[in-house]
Length: 88
Image (cartoon, rainbow, N blue to C red; front, side, top):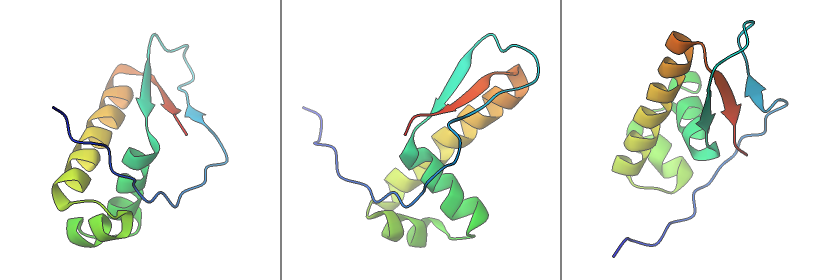
């Protein structure tokens, strides 16, 4: 049986909900709020995994998994020219 989902603290407000290349993209990549928050905390705010996890009230492994998943999606979108859609 799967563990119940834990609430995550998301302190992020976007003025836009997607990023699209100039050419018409063939597919879309969806970034969820918790993935975007993990990227922001680690890459922009410069927090480590421990501090980022504490700020979001999640475990270090969950934070690390969110961060890796977000990076993979962003890299995929950049390489393949896909639209990035923020699912807020």
